[in-house]
Each structure stands twice: as C-alpha cells, then as structure tokens.
Amino acid sequence: MIPVTDRLAIEEDEISISFIRAGGPGGQNVNKVSSAAQLRFDARHSPSLPERVRARLERIAGTKLTKDGVIVITANRFRTQEANKRDAVERLVEMIAEAAHQPKFRVPTKPSKAAKAKRVEEKVKRGTVKKLRRARTDD
Image (cartoon, rainbow, N blue to C red):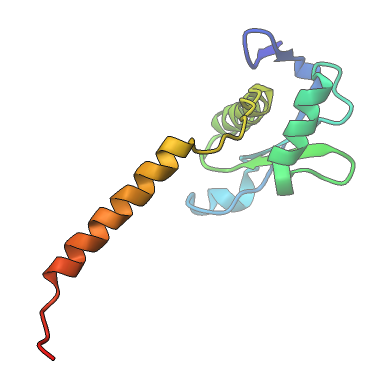
C-alpha cells in the first residue's frame, strides 16, 4: 500500500515501473545503464480511486495521460534507478493528493450599495484633488 492521504491509498500492484536509458550527465555510463524510471498507473481503471478523484486526476495529469487513461511519469533526475523510482512514485502520489483535495465551492457575491457608494465617493475626492493641482489658465 502506498499512502496518498489519510483516507486514500493505492496498491503497489497497480503501478508498473520499467527502467529506460536516460540522457544527461554520467559519461559512458549513460549509454550502458538504464537508470531512468518510467512509471505507469492506470488511473481510469484503478479500484483505489473514487470517481470524483479519478475525474480530477485525469484533468491534472494533462499530457502525462494516454488515450487509454494510463498516467506515464518518466523520472530521470538522478543517476540511480532507486532514486528515480522513488522520485516517480512521489510525483504520482503528489498528483493524486492534489486531485483528492476537493476545491472549495465559491459563492459569487456582489458589492453592497454602501461599498459602491464609498468607491464612487473616493473617486470623486481623488478627481477634485487632481483638479485643484492643475495649472490655472487665465482666459
């Protein structure tokens, strides 16, 4: 079990990790060792995710989501397989945690009559101050 939030966790067998060759620093070792981790998580068919979290996760994943609903995360920040594997899992957990957080429902409000009147009064005051600063022209 990989804990995401206090109420949500995903099974380890829902995630598949493969290792691929990575670019970047490492000299000749880069050409020989597959150190980048590629994590795959089938978000659309995961039994661990509630429907509302699944829908938000698909929106959040963006380009990391395939047509089949599989999230693909490639981690190649580090030189070791273990560090890249950990990084990929952490990034998936962060993404699911963000999807699990339900946004607060915003009730649109309008300014009160008093607030509108105060705003107009301030604008008039400011306008009169600016008018008094103008250079007088004698006609």
